[in-house]
Amino acid sequence: MSDVSRRDFMVSAVAATVTVHSMTNAKAAFAGNTQTNPSRPVVIASGNGEAATKRAMEMITAGKDTLDAVIAGVNIVEEDPNDMTVGYGGLPNEDGVVELDSCVMHGPTCRAGSVAAIRGIKTPSKVAKLVMDRTDHVMIVGEGALRFAKAHGLEEVNLLTDRARRIWLKWKESHSDRDDWLPPAEVPDDDQVVGYHDYDWTYGTINCCAVSAGGDISGVTTTSGLSYKIPGRVGDSPIIGAGLYVDNKIGAAGATGRGEAVIKVCGAHSVVENMRHGLSPMEACLDVLKRIVDTTTESRLKRKDGKPNFNVSLYAVSKRGEYASAAIWSGATYAVNADGESRVEDCAFLYKKPGKGVTK
Ligand code: GLY
Image 1 (cartoon, rainbow, N blue to C red):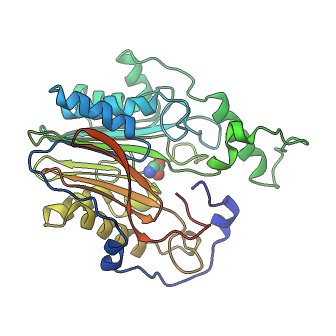
Image 2: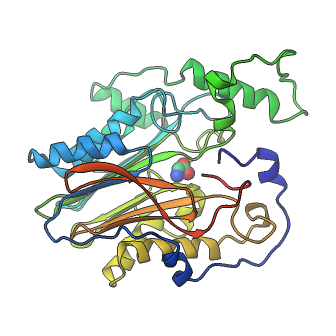
């Protein structure tokens, strides 16, 4: 929620009736990138996943399993200190501690694994895969997840980079004038370097889903979650059916953005169920976004015109290799690798983004 100030977000308390553009309008606003090819392999990801789609497709083309491929793809972003919304270098919780969420689903074997609020491990997607492969459970959280990861040889490290610490400290010192944390008397002239204003508030995440030429489907979602969250807060990303869902007969879907909204509508599962009932990936995503709008009743989560003051993006790929992504607000992008190239495309949307006041 980078361009919504915390203050605007918190005081947006004007009750309003939700007005949703019709599906027809939303579709008309979309340039069109749903494509069909029964045997075409496709990797789709959130906008920060172009490199992930490329690596995953290389592995799938080399005959690797689709889940191993998408995990290897998102590992690039998890290990990248410059992506402050995922893995190492992610923005921390309100105590300054980075807590990560991730889940994986393997279509061919109908299996899943998940970790939530895990600290100290750069690649929670690998831990989620280990939960799937090496336990009788689907989800392990918190301290138990860290101990489990260490038992499997993953290294415990400090995930808080200096840049993330400085951004967190600025938030800590400036979000309230009713505590004892004070900003420096002289504000350092380093915003261009640190990028404070890009990270007032974020739900950033990476989702990556793939279908192989043989029709096998897998997906992964991984995130540092809502910046400055209450410790222990878990978003949609590690929840099977919310931040990710895979059905090897139908397709896969994932979500980024405000996790609380996605959880309430079982977002990714709902997208896949829509595809099961005949909707295209884009129609499936737009329908679920409309449900999110309809189920957003809190005035603090709405703009004055009644529309949500947050964003959610959904991503979907069908077994046949059709794909699409849509968001509540315009301006979002997604990455795709298909037909021999990785590229970033615009998401479809319900509402055209005004100049200010909504997230990207
Ligand atoms: N979608 C990421 C989160 O809400 O944590």
